[in-house]
Length: 622
Picture 1: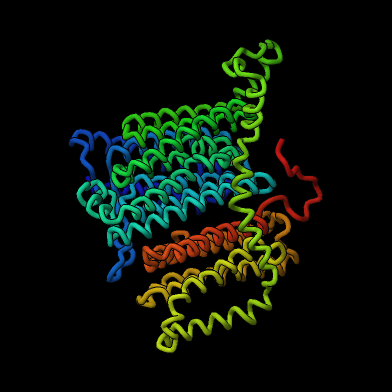
Picture 2 (picture 1 turned 180 degrees about the vertical axis):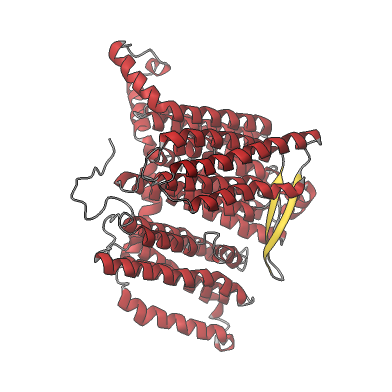
């Protein structure tokens, strides 16, 4: 029974790979492959579920294979199946099957028909990796797949300004969640001194013994998990990204942001519950986050002018209640609530176009005055104040900009003196000197050596902040992102004694795909002349092959699980000690901003309205 778990990963993976080789003109064949893949997956799961239930629904764990192993580190792929996985797989397989049927006709003759179904299968692969994951490392692979799938589907209408802009905004929130998960992995390695599996987390004595002497470490890990869950499930203060994600096609909005992807934060909390179960402060914090999110999102849902935004905020409010249920320990209620909310929101989003047309007709012929509500019993000043705050989404977007993104941009703009000449003439020679000192550590004074890791990390952060705010040269921005990774590697190399193969593993993907991405930008520059960062250029329309090569390079450089860099990032963090909070913060900040800088380059150069179009383009939504 355990060996069959890998089939639930292989089926969507094979379907995704097969769909890539089908010509875009053959809509029927594409839809049949996707329909068949999801259908076989659904049928196979139903057979497996019956067999699993008849045998007493045991907890299954499969240690698939080890990707990398050293003396003090092991990166392994582990699969896990229990009642939580069964519930998520049942809901996910049924809803994906239904949305696939719906999309075959909804997107008929759409320009991106093949691209949509490729991305849906890619998403379904990531979804299954997450729910079958047996440790945080395996879960992180699926987590990254879901993130890039979201970006591609939100920016599905890639010749329009607003979908591309909102896709970048959503990806920026996802990136915060990614780093939260990465920091949780980092500290858990130091806490357990192993790659801890979810099966071992259920061992109360093991977890209790480790947390007894390291309570603050447990709180830190739990907080990082909560940040990752809140970002993925659009809880406060990250709630405003979900309505922006509705810029994609209706089927993708239904399956992503109404039902499956948005509930991944709940899954993370359910899966790690044995770890933070006895941390009362964390349980109270999760409950309060869910409570305030439910209250505020309910008000925001009631003042929305679009049906998609209304459904989005309603879903956020229900997920807030599920957070409370998880914190209270009502797991079966939370799973039942998840299934009900997922089916309801999928249905609402799929029928929303028809409902809107019916509502318009009914309002035209049968006008009904507004009904009396509970808010009308409040003093008018309070009622209008609440209405305006809900209409402005309680200024959550402005808070994120003022306290997170604007300070980053301000620092980046102060680094305006960094240009290609100064980087080549100063920072690269300094980096070479640093490498020489690394090879000859005995010549470095003992009083200086402890300060070098933080110093080099600050230089790396400066590089990536400048890249994030670069407004002119795309290739310059790309080079700065690559240099950031090299400075991070140099910093950690000075921080701990370890085999240099770890650094090579981390930088191998960066170096190879960094060169590929640079030459792709250079080729585009020669063909088009201008690829400045002041506007969206939309060059994917004329140069789809270059855009695809550069997108793959972006994924590889940002640590996506297609190169050794994915393992290397986790490996680099394992060489930061638990008391080096500043170094861990600087490294995490580098990883956050470099992902944003990379996706910004791709969006600005290849997506959006074409720079040479003679037609006017709407830049704001109604």
